Image (cartoon, rainbow, N blue to C red; front, side):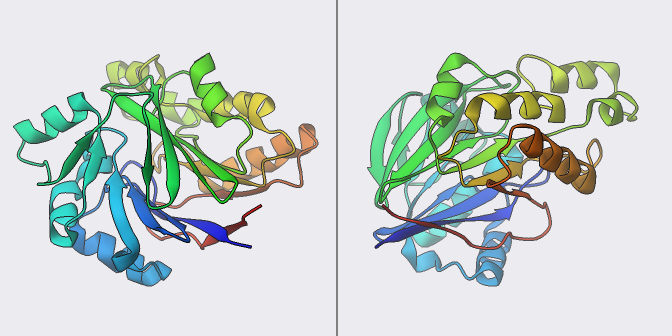
Length: 262
């Protein structure tokens, strides 16, 4: 029986990257750290960069794309990005030499995964991904202000979910951020808060979900322990306590999560 695995190299407002591996190879979703930092974190997490076949980019914001050009060029990897994201990176001289452009909604093969992209509601041309290999599906959706039926459809029946839970509403409102920024973060093209994510779990968590990874957690406007407590209570309320969950950290890689193929 063949397995796939997923590791968060770091998740939050200061950088995001996820290393997914199948028997055929590996890919890196987002490159929000410098090349040096990505490689350091990969070494700490036991990820082999020689297994990488390419990189996926959700959008052009620096906490997702900071290391894209240098990292991909140094390893001679193609970067998969939407046309708008590629154009924005090109204008700022951050586009790698090898680029594979796809439209939101496109499907393609990479590193033994069937990759399905889907549009997310955020500041720019942002996408999420569904990765499938060995009968295992991983849904990834961060940086979205609202959840469309299309997003729900692409996240249902996954064995693992990487899902945004960016802010606690009271902490955001009581923060020193400007009113305009608070409205943007909590708005249609901003981020999902803890309440939004808790509500969404009621629609997504069926018996197929084994692993829930809460991602892109704000250190200023959220609290890791509080979020973990909220998630545990929500899973109990939904009678889904069989589902393992982890709140992903900004500064340290996660453990290696292995999902057995079917």
